[in-house]
Length: 126
Image (cartoon, rainbow, N blue to C red; front, side, top):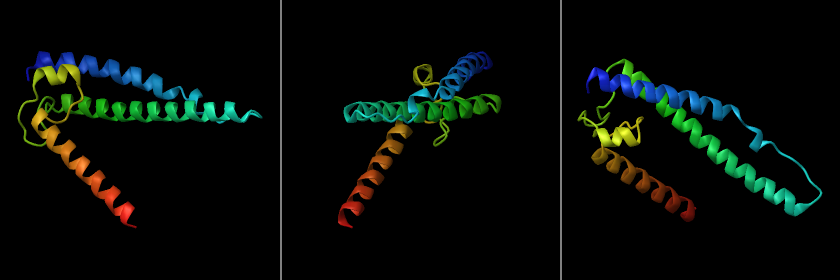
């Protein structure tokens, strides 16, 4: 990847890190509140669960974006971390923090799904 391309992605990633940093500081949605109305408490618990999932997703993206920024600085950005081939520019445009090319990402996803299936099978057998 050219230096100009890396600089462009560095700006995009820096902006995303700043945005995610702000959003992860807002934790109002995960506060626990008690109500005499059971239906209201159920709704609040549901809202809290959604807020926690969103916060976890944002923290994961923040870690990934920071990692991508480190790869920009050490000039390994844009190369697959598994096969060392270039990651397609369209993939990077859609997901600037991508660490794998499409082919390797599919392998990683398939292995992850296989491990989840094995874990479920082990738990159901117990």
